[in-house]
Image (cartoon, rainbow, N blue to C red):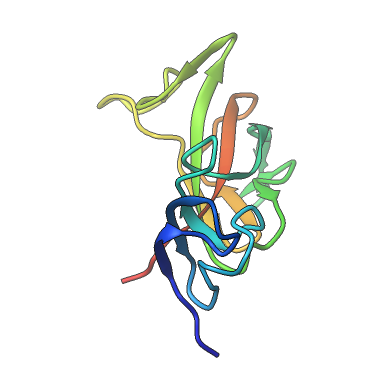
Length: 147
């Protein structure tokens, strides 16, 4: 099967011009770029397509009799498996303010650190989100390449 990963010029409809970049195994000329198989289409209204977004609240926790931390709720958010590990963004949400590069409720004495979201296929894992604190998360239709 021949696939064209990049098209620059006239699209398959015969009159639309632009640039499209398909993910591996998809054809940039013949496939619909709104179905999640593209990383870029110059005709999109937004530069990046969002698969899912929402808020997540850090669960409370307690220590069991051996001193092991046990979480009283999930530390993951599920989303539809896109067939790859997507880029995920998580930002602190405090009242009506969204914090980009730091977390105002960080407990670290050396400064503020990120939320600690780990993107996986079909889920996001929040490692160090303090109990009761809220993050805004976005799952983008952009694959993370491994090296």
